[in-house]
Length: 170
Image 1 (cartoon, one colour):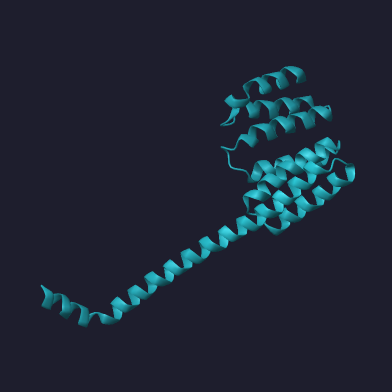
Image 2: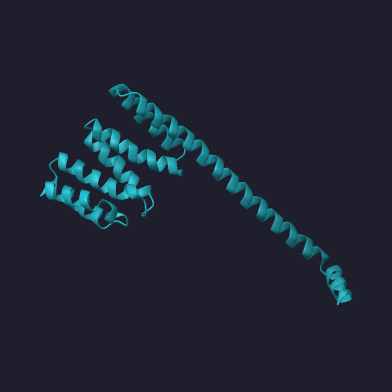
């Protein structure tokens, strides 16, 4: 058995070396990608946290405008990060608070396109989108958004909110 294994190894030495090399190359590639994504998410998270803390401390329209710019920069710099997804939602909230309804609608739609379907924020984003359409007196679109909110994965957590909003719009 040992002799046949040795003979096989000597006969296929180049293939064994190539296979081992390819295996380790793939292993290094996967490890590098993992470390890159870890660093990417960490950097995006730091920026998001800094912006969020700044907003919490300062309550002025200028602070909101600065936060909007910083969130947009974050989304541009780290578009595939989880922090960018949250920044899209926060942008919608900031625009809505400033009564910039068209900007809020775009931000919420952008968030909904990028967010995972099982996020609690999806239901809230559809509710907010309904509120935006309600503010623009587009009641049909408001009802449609609120009905979609009722059908999301996390709708049961916000059932009362969903019913209250639908009733108000009707």
